[in-house]
Amino acid sequence: MNVRMIRLLVVASLALLSANALAGSKDDLDVQRLTTSLNQLDNDPTLGQYAQAERSLARVAVQRLEDAGSSERPHALYLAERSVDQAKASAQLEDAQHQLNQLSREHDKILLQASRQDAEATRRELERQRLENQLAAEETQRLQEQGQAYSEAAEQARAEAEQAKKLAEAQSRSAALARKQADLAVAAARALRARMEGMTAHQGSKGRQMTVTGDAFAPGQSTLRPEARQHLGKLIQFVQSQPSKPIRIEGYTDATGSASANKALSQQRAQAVRNALIAAGVSASRMSTVGMGEADPVASNATASGRAMNRRVVVILRDQ
Image (tube, rainbow, N blue to C red; front, top):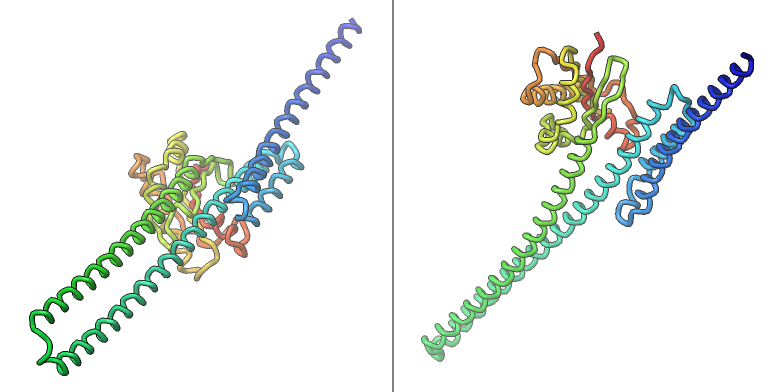
């Protein structure tokens, strides 16, 4: 009987050790996966030069995940994954802004060049007219009217041909610039769509919640971007997963601007999300909205990345 009991204890101990080893392996895989994502971002020939602060914050979050105990791990994993995603998104946004700035400089250069060309063309035209008037006064008797008419017609045709050529070149440059701007707009829309489709829910103090990031709205505006409105599937699925629970929608801003303006903007953005959910078939009676303004920041407002994280709308399935 004692031998059998000893064997059972040995088997139970081995099973416990195996479970701990598997849990540790899972932890290591999460850390390795997030570290690999950051390393790939560091080594990206285009994005590697951007979002230095965000990448540093992400590495701190990954290190905290690695050091977290079992009870702290789910929250640490959520923060680490969001920090890595934020670093990627910030790098993509900075790259897009850099390209937009470069295009803006090229556009200004084109306009300046066109202005100078127009001024020079006007000066030449005035000089030509002055000389023609002077010659007409001095040589009226010597010039043949027919020859003079031919000369003027030829000069006019040359000027018109030159002007047409310059206009065609300017239109070609403007078209190329418009195509580049359109490509950048498409890239920004794709990045936003990816973030909307990648939203995940987590447990908050008031219940399960999901966050809509601030870039779903145009800067300073309370209307959802079309690409954000078209990809609310994850959010709709989240609130409809428990149809009996009331929904609280909280809008937040960063600390830029006055407190009253921020509170009004946060309320308007929360209402915009509510309207989108109603349009998707969610019952209006379940939902309440509140503008929190710059309260309860999730990051420091001293950095651009921190302010970006603070601009958000949080949708909560309230615990009853």
